[in-house]
Length: 239
Image 1 (spheres, helix red, strand yellow):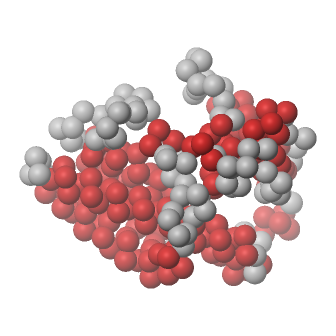
Image 2 (image 1 turned 90 degrees about the horizontal axis):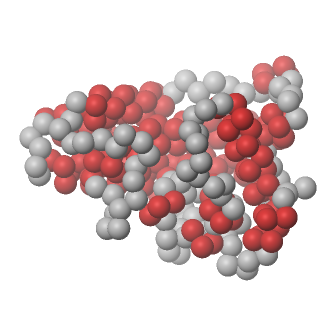
């Protein structure tokens, strides 16, 4: 059963069930935190080094996600339940999963690598820890920093869920595929805009190369996941 804290907060009628599954996880600048169970029940931060004992932190995170699902009456993913019980998926179940070997996935990873190399050698000062919250929003460089890995991961998730939907006919997998592609497209657009602003004060030719790569990524993602372009995420997008 979910902890009482989750059950108490989950009675708020303003909450949008599962909204945390469709966002970019940048809570500092999200306008919907008052409708998000995951945000309202997030663990306290700032106590010690979060990278100490990664196994414990991952287990706590899995318990947290399970509690969010249960408090909102949603079914936790079977793989999550298996991991929390200390089990591994059976060989038969694992055999159903087809590894993602796709040109679009490789494009996403290539952008992540190119952006990381650019950021590491850029004249812009990079944050030493998590991207800080700023009263007037993130700097263009911080936008690129935050999204360069998220773009690749959301493209991968969109492709993996699409394969699952094709294999099982699961409507939930199809939704997850399209909403992951939607988040990837938003992250691509914001990153491209940020790079355009950075180019005003930085003549580094790599900026234009990154923008071209992002533009191609946007076209490819939109072509592969056309439903993502018009998908409305409850609580996050205007209908």
